[in-house]
Length: 195
Image 1 (cartoon, rainbow, N blue to C red):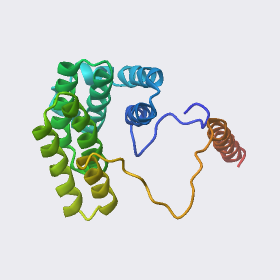
Image 2 (cartoon, rainbow, N blue to C red):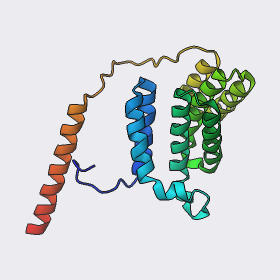
Image 3 (cartoon, rainbow, N blue to C red):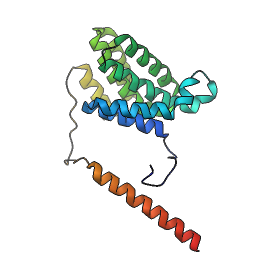
């Protein structure tokens, strides 16, 4: 954020962005990076995490959901299954309180929590969570997300079928773009000062 010279992002809290980075690294198996960004998330959310029961923090429920989901995954990685189950339980509480974030949250929660129940050999709970997410996706006509859940229910890997190959952007390209956006913002500010 320093590179693009902004202090906040209007559509998403910084802590939630850190959460997305944790989940992306978790899926790639880069656990050191997960811990690194989870600690950044905890630092940004320190007040919120200390006062989680305060009803005035309802605007942070999406971030709290993301935090507990990320924490649950890391407990799962550490094979601390009781702690993982508790973290996923807390994530579930916030999932019910964030209707606007359900498009993303339902599927991610179901897939990650089902991995825990798979490890605990609780197949009934696993299928219940997946079926609920599948039904929600179908009711909202989210076909691709429903297919992702169905693949998980059937124990197969979900493969994205695309008309074109997507190459991931290298980190250097992303940093260069951020620096460019930051420089353009500084030029615009200078032009305003001159005029």
